[in-house]
Length: 144
Image 1 (cartoon, rainbow, N blue to C red):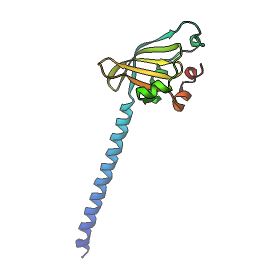
Image 2: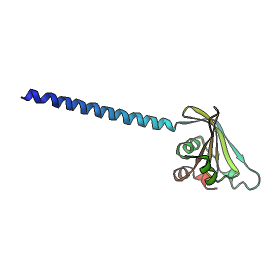
Image 3: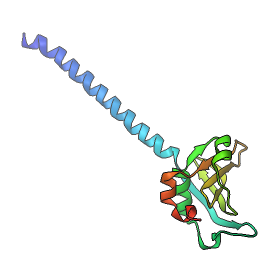
Image 4: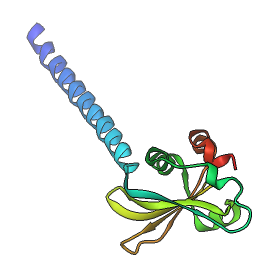
């Protein structure tokens, strides 16, 4: 009688183990995919452009490579219409090139926190706005 009941118990234990293993693999693969989603690498240097007239202190701030990576990892990607209505464009911007998720982009970040990615392969431009998390990460940009 003990042997008759032990086989179904073993099968339940094996099923539970396989289910738990599958769930663990799903969590690990999701974590790897989400880390890869925000994979940003700077290519080359950072250029500053200052408009004419009132510069609003642009010459006093600088972006480091880690700031650019942080910006494009934390800023919110928005539609063109949202960008158009919510962005503030100041006469101060930083630009360069980067690789994001394997695609090379020209990038630009305006001192008020509006950002662009211009894909070199002809895809549509991407638009970013800096909300709370980004503003905390880059106070120099948002302080102008």
